[in-house]
Each structure stands twice: as C-alpha cells, then as structure tokens.
Length: 382
Image (cartoon, rainbow, N blue to C red):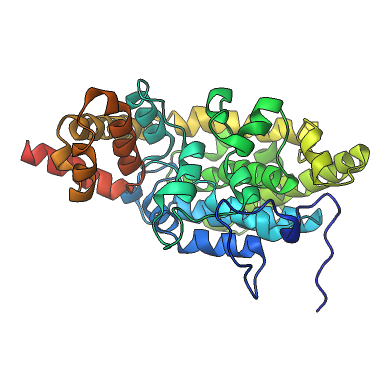
C-alpha cells in the first residue's frame, strides 16, 4: 500500500530539526514512530496507570487513570490528524507523552507541589514532562532521558512562562516570539481537552457524583441525550451513558475538523514555518461548538470537581504532598539511598533549590498508592 502523502504544512519526519544527541536513523520506523515507541516503553508512561484522572486511584478500578486518558487522547488526536492530512505519528507521540509529568492525585497534587516549590522555582507539569523525557528517564547508555525529536518535545511543552522559556534555547523561542507550535502539537492540545471533558462526564455519572438533570443544563449533553433516549427506548443507563458520550465526542471532533480545514485554507499555509508564524491556533472548533464545549466544562467544574467528595479527596491529596515534601527536605534519610546520597553532597544552603528539585522530581514521579503508602510510612516512623 502506498504511503499517504502529507500536506505541505504537515511536519515531515525527514525534515525534523533532530535530536539533542545525534543518532543513526532507524531502519523500519520514522523518527516520530521511534519517539512514540520510546514513550510507550519508558517508566514514567507505565506509572500513569496508577495516577488519577479525577478520582484517587484506589477509589475504584473502573475510573480513568492518566494512562487510559493518554490512550484516549491519542485516539482522538490521530483521527483529527488523518482527516487534516498531517503527521499522525508525531501527533500520537505528543498525545501519549503529554501527561508524563503529572503528579499523583491529578491537579490537586500539582497545585500542592507547586505551592511547596514556590520558593524554589515552582512546579508545572508540562515542564516536568519535558524534564522527564530530557533528563530523568535513565534507559540509554549514550544520553540522558529519551532523546526525543525537537518536534515531539515542542508539542509536550504546551505552556511555558517567558522566564522559563529563556532557559530552554530554541525550544523556548516560540513563547518569547509568540509563535505557534506545529498543527500536530495543536491537535494534541485540543484532543486532550475533548477527551477529559467528555470522559469526565462518563466517570462522574458512573460514580453517581453527576446526574442527568445537572448535565442537561449543557446544550451539548442535552441534545445528544434526547436523541439517544428518543431513538432507543429500552437502553440501560450504562448504554445511554456510553452512547451519549460517544456522540458528543464525534460531534465536537467533526466540527473541529471542518472548522480547522476552513482556517487552514483561509491562511493558505505553504509550509510548517507558515503555521508557526500564523500567531494564532488553527486547530479550533467553531464558535458555536466552542461555547457548548466550554459550557459543559463549567458544569463539570461546579458539579464534579467541586463536589464535596472530590474536594475531600483533594484536601487529603494536598496534605499528603505537603507532608512528603516537608519531611524529605528536613529528613532526606526518608528518601531512597540513591537520592539521599545525592542530597548529602548538596548540604550547603546555596544548594537548597537543587535539593528541592530532587525532592519534587521524586514526589512527582510517585503513583497515587505509593504516595499514600509513603505518607503512612513517614507517620509510623516519626
């Protein structure tokens, strides 16, 4: 079967800006397929199985984790990339790596760790994802990290302050110059939004923290729910839930593809540089669908993320992260032997920032259940 020819504005593997450490080109894979494979086989990716999406991991086996979420994002991203004739392999690699830097306990954990690190440079999960693939993974003899291509690393770094961008060289330039990343990176970003918005509806209903009445305040949910119950009279609640969510995703994705096609055509993009210099996102929903999408997001925030049961988990998560950070900083002997030895060489006060980053890296890499077991161990051994 002949290879599909990509659009001129797609990122071609053969024209990649390359890797930090030069390598021999793979025989039977593209550079972006190699990136994807390295991400799938890395330790941080496997640990996503035990990191929460909304619910703490031990709350139930049926809820989404960061791993299942990442796979769902990749599926949506590939669909959009293929429809727009851009690079599916690059899109998939970015989608699979986008949450590698997430802490245990989801956004609550990130907020808590950022608060712990406020005097030491802060903590942000996109930068942490980049740190994992550039530095922290230890798998190869010739370089640290995974040595991914520039384009995959660019897509992983969705957000970055200008101060942090100054330390990132070429990778940080787009945040300084207000350029946009590749269309593949833009697709991965919005596929993430689509996935968590719709799948949190599924998990919220399954957990009985959301109900149909509150969700029917969302036009996107209501119109699809009415169609489903009108067409099928005898579906179970589970079937209704799955069918409504499936239809919502399809509706938003189809709208996104058609609207993005129009934007790309209007800009008459000649190449990847034209994408970067456009200075606005070209992968966008129509205004009508964007409003529906954002209305659903607001309802989820109010009814699910601020639900008393979720907030109770959030408070426990923040307490756990804070306790771990404070304990490791004051008593590094609670860390692994390897990290303890590393910190002992930095005992002078001027190295406190470096020690804090070592501790933050360790905590951010924890799964939910390991963080909770460490919290319990520390309490027992004090």
